[in-house]
Each structure stands twice: as C-alpha cells, then as structure tokens.
Amino acid sequence: MEVIKVTPRGYCYGVVDAMEVARKAARDPSLPRPIHIIGLIVHNRFAVEELARLGVVTLDGSNRVAILDQVAEGTVIFTAHGVSPRVKERARERGLHIIDATCPDVTKTHDLVLDFAGRGYQVLYIGKKGHPEPEGVMGEAPGAVYLVETEADLDSLPDRITQAEKLLVTTQTTLSQWDTARLVEAIRRRFPHAEVYNEICKATQDRQEAVARMARGADLTIVVGDPRSNNTNRLVQVAEELAESPAIRIESLADLPPGILEGKKRVAVTAGASTPSQVTREVIQFVQSFGISTRVLPQFDGEERPPQSATHATVPAMRDDV
Ligand code: SF4
Image 1 (cartoon, rainbow, N blue to C red):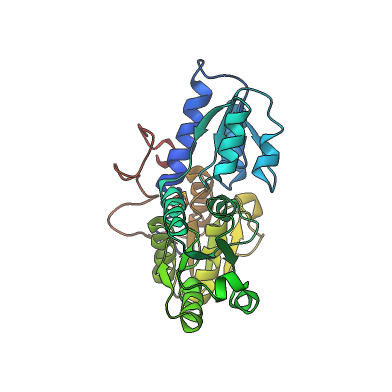
Image 2 (cartoon, protein in one colour; image 1 turned 90 degrees about the vertical axis):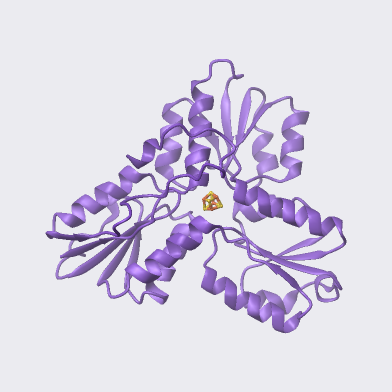
C-alpha cells in the first residue's frame, strides 16, 4: 500500500501559538488563579485535555458572555477563534485578568469589519452559524454585520443589506475556498457594487490545496480531527469533491473502522489545523503497517512551522511538531 502523507497538515501557527500561550499561563505562578479558557482553546478534545492536566479549566457554551459570567475570579484566556468586544468588556467589568490567544488572522478580520462599519458600510459575513469565530466578528459591529452560510440565505436578507449603498463582503478564516468562491460569485451577481475581502487564512488554503493535489486518485483519504473543527470538516469535503477520493474523518486511531484499509492501494492521511501531531502520527504509523511504500513531499514531512512575524507570543519550540 502507498501511504500519502499530505503536507502541510495539522497544527497551524495560530493553534501552535494559542496552545503555547495557554501552557505558559499554566506554568506562571504569578497569574491569578483559577485559570479558565472561555470556550475550547482550539476545536480538539486532546488539546483541551492536555490543558486540563496542567490545571487550566475549559468552560464551553454557545454564548461567551454567559460563559464568562460563571467565572468569579482569576485569569481568563480567550481562544484562537477570537471574542467580541462585549466579552472583553465583561471580563474587565468582573475584574478578571485577561490573556488573549486570538489568532492574528482572526484579529485582522475583526479590524476589517470595524473599519468598514465605522465608514458606514453594511457587512455580509460568510461563515458557519453557531461557530465562535462569527460570533466574535459580528460583535464588532452588531447592527452592521449579517451572517450568511449558503446561497439559500441570500433569499432572506434584510433590507439594510439589500438596500445598502456601501456593502462589504468578507469571510470566516476556515471555510472551503471553493464553496466560498461560488457564494461570493452569487453575491456579486446580486450586488455588483459589493467590495469583497476574502479572509480565508493561508494555513487553511494551504491544507485544502494540498489535499486537492495530493489525495487525487487515493482509494481513501483519512482526515484526523475533531468533529467540531470547521477546517477539519472542510478537508473531508475537499478530498471528496476536489480530489475525488472517498474520505472519512476520525478523531483518533481508535475511530478507524476495522477493515477499512483492506484492499486499498493508495491511502492519503491529513489532519485539521487543530489536531495534535501525535494523534495524526499514530494514525500514519498504523496505516503504514499495512504497506511498505510511503510518499512525501521532499521539502519537509509534517506540520507547518510558525512564521516569525505571525505570532503575538513567543513560541520557543514547536513541541507538537517533533
Ligand atoms: S486556521 Fe487560520 S485563522 Fe484559524 S488559528 Fe489557524 S492560522 Fe489562525
């Protein structure tokens, strides 16, 4: 069996950074206790469990202001997905020590929306309903931003969007670039005057393009990641629709259906941007045990290294990428 280790895969620089921020907080005795994370630091159970072992408590829920109200004292960490200004304000009102692990790419979208809304634009934001990232971005300008997920949503837009003379279209960072391009095209047909800023991050694009290219012709593509991870689910979609490879998502090796590798000649393996390397490595090792041939890109074998300029915290070594 040929095992295609799709590269890049797994942890992106935003996730590496957020995890390191949380680990550093756990090790810092000067920080007020307890330490809570408001939401999942990244959408991966194993990452959350690692922080729990370090004494960092994760509180999850659909409304971050409501989650915050469960915290009486200590330190709160905001996750890589970003939070709305209202959440930050509430944390300050409650006298909590704040650590912000928002990915710089998400912050960039917040700034974009704030800037355009401040100049009188209405904003059509393409994102996933119920995901924390749109919740945070929409909170920057609650009266100006409207969330759409599919083309069908365009049939029920409010007047403030349909009649807006100044209209910005922008996106969540972890969407499928092909789906988004189709939706943007549909929006442009209705609103030719709209200004479009695609904010799908480079890490997401690189992982999707790698799957589209490398998984082509694979008898099976295994995507390792959490069911709540949007970018993980998009990789499954890309494998099926763009690479035309049957694909499954598993959280870890324990989820791999018995017998699924039987008779397969080429199997591709990739991982969502929030999947720890060790979890993916176990899957790769298991799949390799079925065959002798492994193909990787020549540059490097593994997850993306964090760029020097993209972090807001120091990342001394990529612990998850050894
Ligand atoms: S997927 Fe993109 S936006 Fe999300 S944490 Fe990673 S780099 Fe940042």
